[in-house]
Amino acid sequence: MNLSLSASHQSTSQSSLSWQKERMSHVVIIGCGVVGATIAYELSNVKGLEITVVDRQPPALASTGAALGVLMGIISQKTKGKAWQMRQTSIQRYETLIPELETITGRKILFNRQGILMLLPEPSTSPLEGDVGILQWEKLQEIRQSQGFSLEIWDKAKLKQICPQVDNDKIVGAVYSRCDRQVDPTALTLALVDAAQHHGVTFKFGVSVLGTELPSQLGDDENFCYQLETTQGKIAADWFVVAAGLGSSLLTAQLQQMIDIRPVLGQALHLCLGHSLGKPGFQPVITGDDVHIVPVGGKDYWIGATVEFPSNKDEIPPNKELLESVRQQAIAFCPDLAKATTIRTWSGLRPRPEGRPAPVIGKLPGYSNVLLATGHYRNGVLLAPATADAIREMIVHNDF
Image (cartoon, rainbow, N blue to C red; front, side):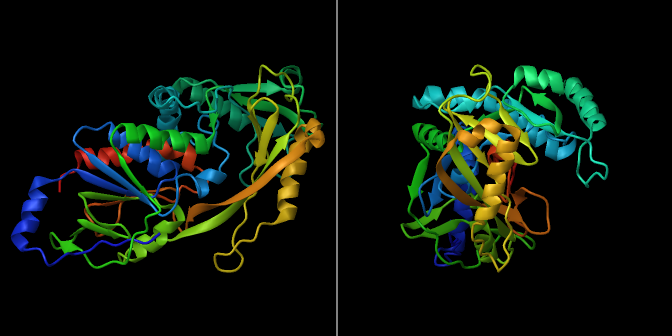
């Protein structure tokens, strides 16, 4: 995806100043994965905004279409600051967002409200950096209780009683987060687009953004962009929101302020078992050793995902051995999965910021009206509502 922010110096200085005074309240969002679509929908609830979304491909085909949609918010070890606040905001918003979207669109969105179960391995004699021991889980449990969220620590006997599908001698217990969720990312994104269209948002799919020129400058420090040139013509706006994932690097480079976003490949499998694991009435997401077992549709399960970094520039050929190791780890947790049939495998590239924390949210340096909502790495679906909330606040409360 390419960006063009044209100076349009053919216009007179007077008409340019007049345009700025009128403040068209027009927002252009570049990118329509789950993040861009959520921003579009949430902004569509703000009176007085005209919103256009541009993407060179249909929605939910890139990182979003490859995601598992596991919303690990409460069970995350993040307990304070922006990292926790974004998780809390998103988890709480999903409880109202899903029924809201289903009512507006008539679509059914697969949304697992049965929580996330994290398996606890035997304590290591030489703990690796990042390993979380039982004392840390107990501390997190206390913190979450003070924040109003439930987090349960199960011993091996309780785990076996409630989730008999977990059968592994090296698993000594589990942490159960009943407030965390899982959502189908593609169904969610399509519903967001549909609902936003109901609210008057314009979507331009199959439209690329072309070349760049330096925009007009309002003052000594910040540039003000007011025009986008695409394969379907020019679009003038007050705000441009870059939510293009991996495409954000090129977009920002053309504005001489490149945000370096690198790809990290993830592979996953869709398995059909023919029946539910364990008790049909209790089907939480099961996770352990960074492998997720995600119930979908009663007898099917998504298994994933690998984490594969580029070895040669940005090219990452999928590693079949790594995918097989993920499948074997899932079977090690739930042996019944060995009987499952593989329906499909898929992969996608996650956008990971280089040299800075994920995600990247805020103004593009040097520009008063170019906002960044990108580089979410492995948490795009989880943090989409909080990202949209942050972008809305910037637009609604900012003064040029």
